[in-house]
Length: 488
Image (tube, rainbow, N blue to C red; front, side, top):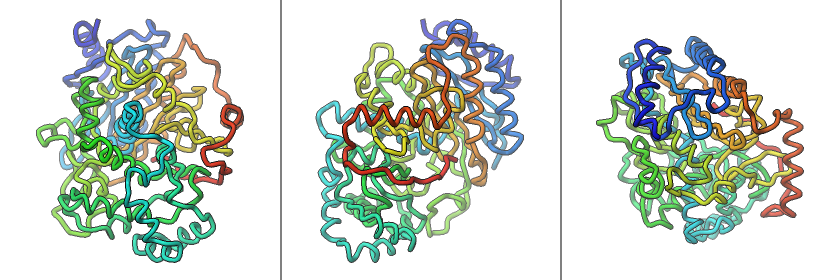
């Protein structure tokens, strides 16, 4: 019995009662259930209202959508505040589409890579050069004596180059597993890196020759550490993975994920490059003059709405492995439930249960105790959406303000979508993400898992489990200190 058939009017009525003035047309593939039916306290969940109101009052975000599921049912769904403040004020609605930014990595690119693994078309232990020949050519062309010179041309700092000299990392050793776990040693690029690559004309970056130049330019970046020895979050890892998906599949990344993931799951709101006819439902992000990695060419100032907020995505025509996807809370609820159900939804299998388990299990194998699955965060400095009370789970964040956190033991998914960067690139979603997770944890009246441990205890325990389960890491390298950078 679906929410579309019998629960829609009841949920909309509840939301109208909770949020006066609310108006939205919702398509949802999950049924609605009263929280008590799935072991949650509805009154406790209403504390999310206070968290969101405080965040809006503090100008951390103009508004947003929060959707909570448990045991395959929607138990809480509500829109807050405004989806637009400029150039016109618009109320947020449940069907608002948001720029997912880095959530693209786990909603599109990671499952795409694992689909290709399941099809026997690639191995995660393969080196990048197997699929991107120009990577190997870059090794030959950019020898150790010229790395600093080329790196400087592409925007690397003196500190970066010194770090490379000390680390002695070999880009040729980078594998797909390293990219998926952000243990490749690639750094976080500066604005000048992308500005130096070419022009802002999007068609230029559609050409295979220019895309190969991008791969070669990434190779020229000095590594922060030897591949496999530490964790450092970098968009470059997934930019390369998106390119590999396209090379192996023979299709654009957007075409591949639409055919293999979104269409089978009826995720009609999820796509790269949404058409302009969808603009009225999309939460705008920032004015063009405030874009990260902005184009050197001056253009008329305008508010981004159907285009990705990161200019490095726009340079790739809006389709990239690290960002560019748009979606709604309802669609993401279906995606999360597919993962919680072991890779299938309503009889449609997307991934093997073993692939889902691999995504949500530590694959980095670092002595530091930091835990990263394939694509997903498990326990690092980026784990703010987990809050303080859940014992585990996996999730991800997005620069524009969204986050996902899934707790398989409790069959819970927490979906928070905001455009915290609207309208001028300020705001922060980090505080509200953890607070919402804590409220959700507090609402659980029938728990399957035990109480959460302290971070130090849990990191120690999981590190021991990881080391005992695996006799050696993929590279046999010890962990090094990692970035203390926090998610926005």
